[in-house]
Length: 119
Image 1 (tube, rainbow, N blue to C red):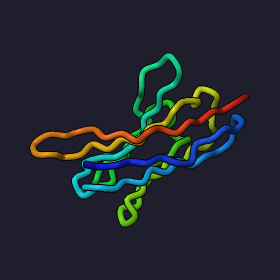
Image 2 (cartoon, helix red, strand yellow; image 1 turned 135 degrees about the vertical axis):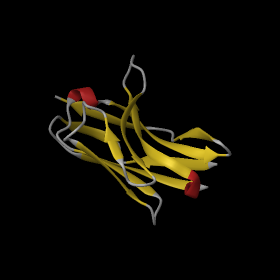
Image 3 (cartoon, rainbow, N blue to C red; image 1 turned 30 degrees about the vertical axis):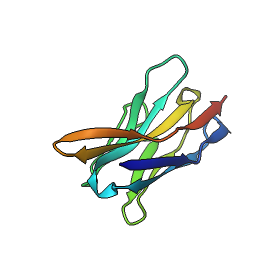
């Protein structure tokens, strides 16, 4: 089992920056990849960025060049640095970990943190 706790959300104006943090605990050595999803009102949850255990990162096209995901393996922390924020970035941001259990991957989720960007 893996527990994920997000922090760092808030309200800010367009063009600003924010950093989200996700603290992982439990069987973190079995995490295959970890990342961030978001869900805006009335929309499906979508992948924002993720990083594998080997350090390979991937991003949604809508955030490339603006967001950066990083991880501190020693502290079991994952960060999402968000720059040049737009109103369309407004959403609840969830930390997600894909964990190897047996022969399959299982998803674990944090409780979410709200990011609101105003014009």
